[in-house]
Length: 163
Image (cartoon, rainbow, N blue to C red; front, side, top):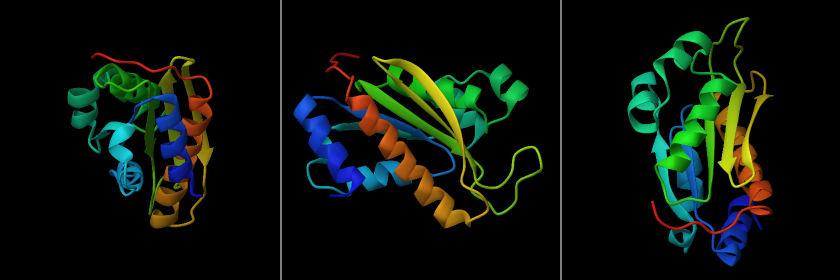
């Protein structure tokens, strides 16, 4: 069973909806989840916020946060996940922002991806260095990691309704 299939089964059993906010993955996480039949039972919505303007407009990421830390930061990942949770019917929301490549810098190298996870357990963030493994592989690795975060969060999530 794939991680996405496991997510579908576990979230469905728990009666929990999930949401995602994606930057460098460009909707790949949402596409991975919604490729499964029955995903409408657990997937509320996804926000593809590739530009900084989209992060601000759709998720409420503060311009000050973007300016101080840059889009690829745990601070922005935190605000993205919080924004997705606040603007959805989900009990758990995950965010992804990073540098898929090619390129990067000494300060923010290719393959650096920041994640945020918001839900009943509170908020967590983390940064994973996937390395310069190529754009497609960084994106796939980020999706797989985000699915793992959602699965771990389901252990503590409770159903949420309303908006």
